[in-house]
Image (cartoon, rainbow, N blue to C red; front, side, top):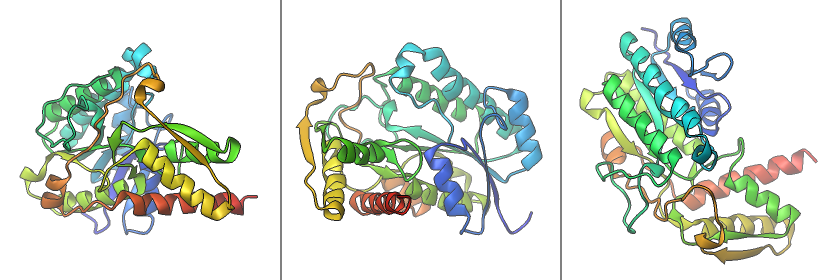
Length: 302
């Protein structure tokens, strides 16, 4: 075994995969991020070839069918990638003795109540996407003992498409936006998720006790509505550009979508802190850093 850990991250173009690639570049860890066509989770042969060719010490599955509304009309596609493919991956990891960190979501819950969900709370997805992710969790538990299922929520980053980028675009193009104010959670930076994964991966690679395997919640600390998140984004934008951005706070009933969204996306993170020493950052601090980075990158390209 070499001193330098090698991680295979599946889901090359996703937010967490890109964040992990950025973080590992300065962390003394070799991270190989693969997506289609190099690694196709829908193909058992492709999975085997990647695992045997790269020979990682740990696998991170950051790939998923993430179109929440699209899953309502294409449930087969969501299940194929979020559940069936995950089972194949877990089985191949089991055959090779490889630990797997698998990303999941708060959408496995029904969003009832106002308390943060703990890992042992009953699951009851409101939509097809949540149901497919829950099926993927179950597949991992059944096929592989060496696993960490990491549920997170409201992911954003400097990469790809996400809520933060959408709000910045609307601020620039329309001077404001209408944003739901009755869904509560914690916007979570993919860069912070990557840091959490690295901390977990190092402990697993060092021979962490088997009882550390299981299901964990990771989200930023604090809570906010989507409108609160937009308000902070607009505040930062206004300070840089010297303008006023309009925000209209609306109920979810005024923003109809094919898939129902949970009103409560709060996740209790005590377990991951107690077990792995992962301490979530305040959502405002991480969000401010990402917005400032995006605005700076935009200014530099003009």
